[in-house]
Length: 191
Image (cartoon, rainbow, N blue to C red; front, side, top):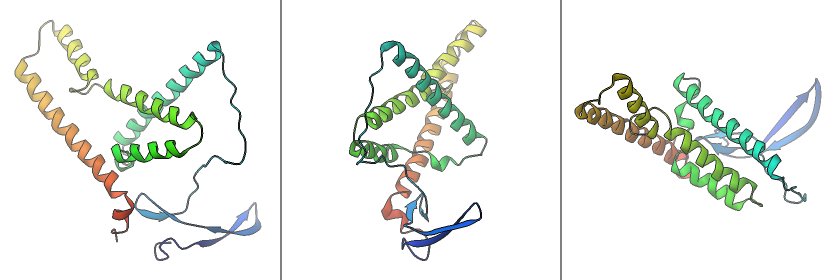
């Protein structure tokens, strides 16, 4: 696929020991390399109908959605910290803009509202992480000070905040670099 640079590839598929008709696949650039994959695209020619929910059904559904998505982000952070998943898969502002563009082009409001809800939920959870500059870090400092029964020195707090600021800026630069490296212009420049 790399040498073909996106030319269609004919695949022979064996399913349960039986050969099925060859499939013509069009590779695309994903994460900086030519790959074959499948994207779920809602069919545009099939009419869909959404049933409105009552308040008594909507509240548990919303709770389940928030619980499922909040555990997903914590699971992903755990996998990144344990090196099971590369941090290069994180999306920054450019990745979010790409997803927002996809949502804007999609029909209906489901994907648009779902993306907005996911971003809001993820930002809220990230803000509650016990990292010094974030709100979760402030809560952690307050808990430590209440356990010590005295205020932590302002000089110590300043040094911790400075180190945390440098880490956040470095992390943001890393995520932005990965976002820019995924742009089609830059993926063609890689060997």
